[in-house]
Image (tube, rainbow, N blue to C red; front, side, top):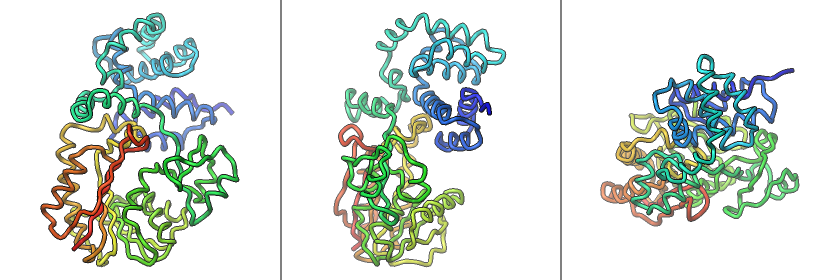
Length: 411
């Protein structure tokens, strides 16, 4: 049976991403679910989709060399898709041009001309790119690159942007509620021990049965460390205040050996559904899922928790390598708005922690406004919290996703 055209499927996904606020991962997942593609073509769509989003500023730089006037959105997306194939993928030029032009509709002649000039002038374009501003070469918003350049220095800012543009390796946490690390290694599949965390394996291709059976959870090693800092014990009563999609919740249950109790909260019904599905697949038995918006009055009757994990909403600047489109969703105002939101959530959650209990505040941000500055603010406005320890992970230093966590005790 002839399957769908992979380039047309990819273009459709890009159009959906541009016209909505949905994250790229969600758009691609929905697209691939309904498309009829071979495994090879699924891989092509995935690489091209993320590649165009990741490199859109660089691709626009090339387009504007040949077409400095305005383009309609669809024609620009078609050109970005064609140029990505020509400059970043191992696709024969004639195939990239022919297949892409067929997507262009009324703009066929324009797209054909630009792509052929891009082939003929490839060397001079690469020379121009070498002299382009760093935020264009690494395809990041100018304000974000400048922010990092000011705080980290220009060399480290470029290293961080380069890191963000590299495909992320696949790490999986061994779910010992279902299996053991040794058993997974014996199955083969190219799995190998991660140097970043003893509970993680790195794989090149993830066997579907590993996911379906709950043997593993796809999870960067950085996401485990907030749970370990909280140090939940078997038999304790734990609150995971912002739990979806459930990676940290599942690890808490694993550390607790499925005993005691965990209340896992989130506020969006779709996220709660995914949380329940993941916990069931992982064999988690000690957890109750509760819908809560921490900024509103809620009817959570449980209190006196021994420990609380609060992985707050944040700008996600530590995980741009994995969440490819985050860079294009951010605005300068987010770095003022998010700390206020994070502080308000902490204020609403802390009353549920018993005296003497442990509290971990965590983000996947590398921004001081969301990390050290929020911790300093919490020490001012919640005097019965004592800071015990902070940990910070930097992509360019630790070679895993960026993260921040702070452990407090409640007096």
